[in-house]
Length: 295
Ligand code: ADP
Image (cartoon, rainbow, N blue to C red; front, side, top):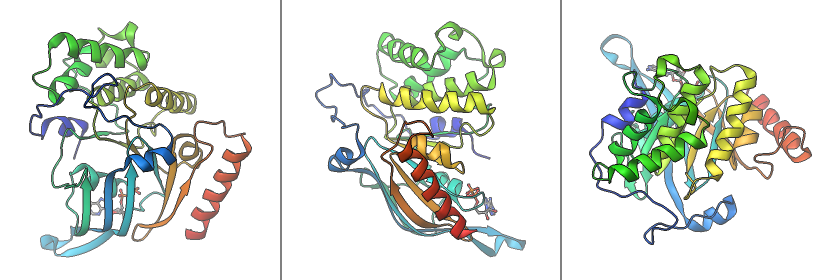
């Protein structure tokens, strides 16, 4: 079983500095998907197949993902949408370096992915992703220190406090995970991930275990947090929920099942708009049709 700690722990320390808008080395990132395309792709997934080995002696192969090709543009939120069992999580885990691919290639900034790295941090649905012996602020700061071990402690504190504030947990900054609600734990996990400024943030149905009201609230907050980063974070977000896909994704990649393939990749002009917005409603209808064709 993989958890978010692996994304922080199974990695070599990276002597990088945080990217900020003031940092001359930072690459300015346009916020719109079209402009992001000009800024280049962070991820290149080419013709990827992923098999699981099962049965006696693990000699039998089950194909979970077949011939998937997709690029993720710098600074965009790409949503991977599809029915349960179509290979979304498998693809995301492979992108995170947690699962080997059977053929094809996955590259992040031109380098092949072969193991977990702080450049690719995962957030899961599970509420138990935080370190229980650390407070909210310490959990977030821990992520910053893992990413930049040599960073000045005051700067680490500044970065962590800003992200804690952005997710609305300033009042809970000194509380321990066991005193937080499920939504607050997810907020803290998200703050920790953004604080570590990964090249790509991998989110596997992170709001799937929340009630409907909290889920909508978290979707709005994710868009807000994303838009307030000094350098926009690139996100790959897995969901089976059409409305969530339309609200969050600059683009939506629709997957088919048995084995998982790319059905379509759709641009979303209605990102961050209410589901009643005509463009959002049209796109949701279109996505439902695409998913129905596969059923
Ligand atoms: P999704 O995220 O879209 O629900 P998954 O990536 O979890 O789909 O699963 C894709 C397929 O791979 C499913 O048929 C599932 O049963 C299978 N699968 C997932 N994990 C394993 C595993 N550890 N061993 C064998 N088969 C698996």
